Length: 275
Image 1 (tube, rainbow, N blue to C red):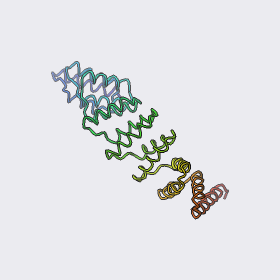
Image 2 (cartoon, one colour):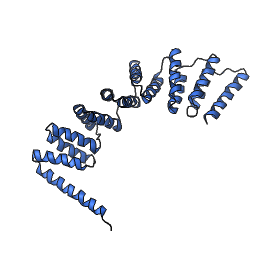
Image 3 (cartoon, rainbow, N blue to C red):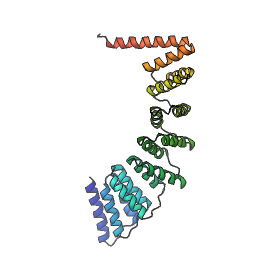
Image 4 (cartoon, rainbow, N blue to C red):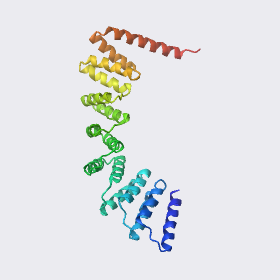
């Protein structure tokens, strides 16, 4: 457990000191690295205080390991304490420490700090990776700042990072839910270019918007792409497409949809029968 591992570390350090050996910065960092999954935030703070008492100054690696421990345990009080200590010690973050800070701020919902640190890392020449960007996008969505989430997603694409299907769908769903349909359509087109496809419910929302714009041909095209991508249409999907077929006089597709609906109804009835 946490206490057992910490006690062993204290005993090791005590034994070294009793033999006239003052643990080095490298030794402290090694202990933190080996114990990152087992230490608590309090353990880390206690160890770093011991470093200070021994005249050993922590570096960016020390703080990254210590903050990573708090991040893993979601010990935000210790995380905040260590950030203050880091700032007072005038530690200049390396790229890994920037990532840990961004993840910690994002998971706490501290959006402004996350965005500020993301920009700091970018300005320092350390290009943030996909996980870092997506953690901040998630924080933006949690704060209902959909505009910033969409801008960060666009920036990921600009620097040729590949966003996950999940984050695409989360941002798209948020745009549509907030009535930002044009932004949603633009994002959907970018998704299609990357061979990503959302669930049927989101496609239905896009179809409804296309119909409101009088773009019935786009509804039909989206339906075809849904089927090519293996997305199972819902009843609402078929309803939207039938309206589009009627307005564009695409009777062949309309007849095909009627047959599919009859087949669906037949299968539903068969499943309800007792054999």
